[in-house]
Length: 136
Image (cartoon, rainbow, N blue to C red; front, side, top):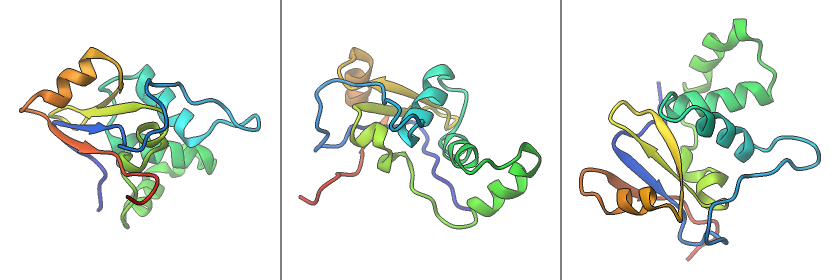
């Protein structure tokens, strides 16, 4: 089974992020976007879920997969590679870094926060940049 989980890692905001402070994603056309769904899950539950948990929950909610089928669907979903949070709009567009602790549980950090800046400088935490939106 493939995984999107990281451990002791900070996914830093993309170099070409268009803003200089974190923004909460908004609904578009009356519907919650992927970014908003991801944000709501991890902001309300810091260090409760792994990246895999969040990515699959958003997929399952958007596809209206019934709870009774989610275990089997999750296995099928991760049987092939899935994009990790380095490609999430949260880290590319909305200015949120995502920290994974030693257990792979994640929490969001605003790019302008002191906690984010401190983690980016800590040697015990691996730092990875989110993927750029445009080619260099």
